[in-house]
Image (cartoon, rainbow, N blue to C red; front, side, top):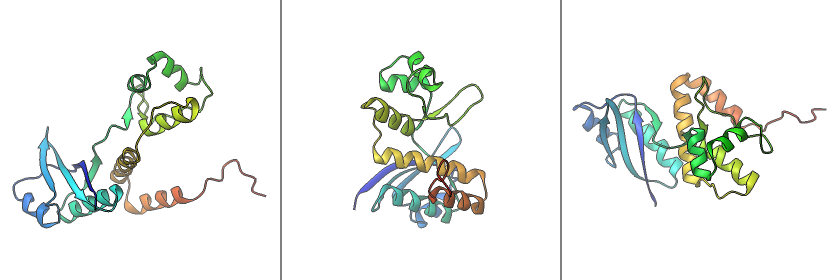
Length: 180
């Protein structure tokens, strides 16, 4: 079975009495720590898939009294970082993003209020489909990105609301189809 290595961010920093709880909950394959007051687990988990590893770590952390609120990843990036990754100038990428150049449909930002962050997985897919670019994202990077978004959403809404939203994600999109 493969071993997957990743870091998750906890809702709080572990204290001395938490270390035994983490170990007893099944996190003997994780090294807990604290950086700048934030708790984390550096994990090397054997599992059938990366998604299974992430879910099992989150479950084990909950059994120990923690909530996994994020997974360390580099999916949310600025247009400046996009430009560097795809070998274009910032202005070229900015014009693509605002629809003043290129075919349009550049992925929407994941944030706003003057400083936009974009999902690298979405942007890399767009560049690959639009320009045949070598800007690629591995399947593991996509899973890490998706898990990060889900964990952030999970921290924002009650479980029943999140369950409804996840169920919606599994339904086929019907916008723009002929209903009758």
